[in-house]
Image (cartoon, rainbow, N blue to C red; front, side, top):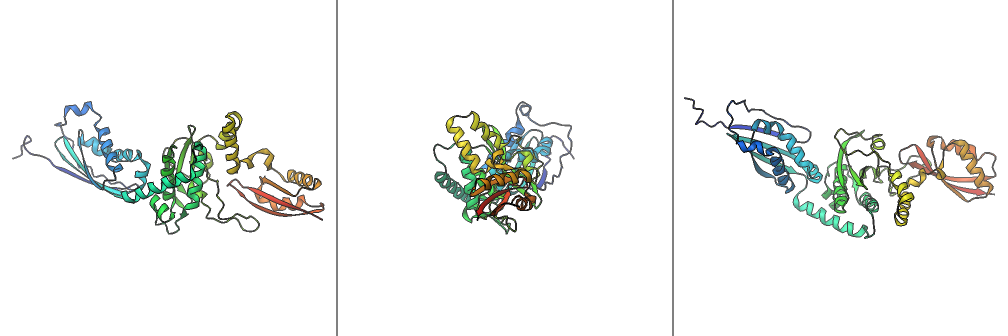
Length: 385
């Protein structure tokens, strides 16, 4: 005989979850009889559950249980989102979490959630990363550096100490520091660790590029957010064929502190991140114009080191006519060399040849692509009879 007052109903829900797939089996039938504690309505019980999950993930627990007292149907529906929100509290944990599986068991108004989690990086490996980050920051960060200088120093250290893992097997910051190679996720995790320890607000962002899924960082400087793709600034790709010469060991800044608009030229993302709408060049120019003497000097130095000074009008040649004028002026004054950015990069060889027609001077030219805007950085050595 069925007795509602004495029989316990046990429900078991097993949900296998990962970032790319979540399966939820809703086995909770509606009930006309509520056994939830009245106090649950007075507390943010879902928020408390989220906090419990965040604490366990951050402690790198592999097997743990958390309890919940409240509306089990709502909890079941919201749990995948609560897990994602818990993981958002620490991007490092979120991106080393490989997979998780949880089981819900409910008796009356109490539910127990049992979680099994797998991580790509162990606690011991993370400790090695932390030690390596501390040593690196000690070597590259000077006491008088501002956040702009620290960000560049960290960028340069990572792209010169880590190589892209062509085998696509190494995903962690531990791989990056212990093996010296990793895929984009490893670059981003190491960037996150170093920037955060240096006191710079940082996030990990992900989306896709033409070759597939991709991850990078976002950095906040002076209250303004920028994109920072360490992987794509790594000097692993040789320059164009012919006279377009780019050394593999040259640090690039093509994806250094970019706006949303700039990055969307070849990156795509659907998640919501802080808006990156201000040009970094504009920030440096503002510091040059209105900052203290020290800040202005640092901004100018950064602008040159990052190659952003090539965007200034005095360093830019915009057309074949302007190129001819510049070269004729240099030859008339018997200058030994010229350096400039030529806007229409694809037409440069023909324009250069035409500019020297009729002149009693020769030249040796080297040029390379500037960032990804189609222009060329040109270096000319003028030769006279």
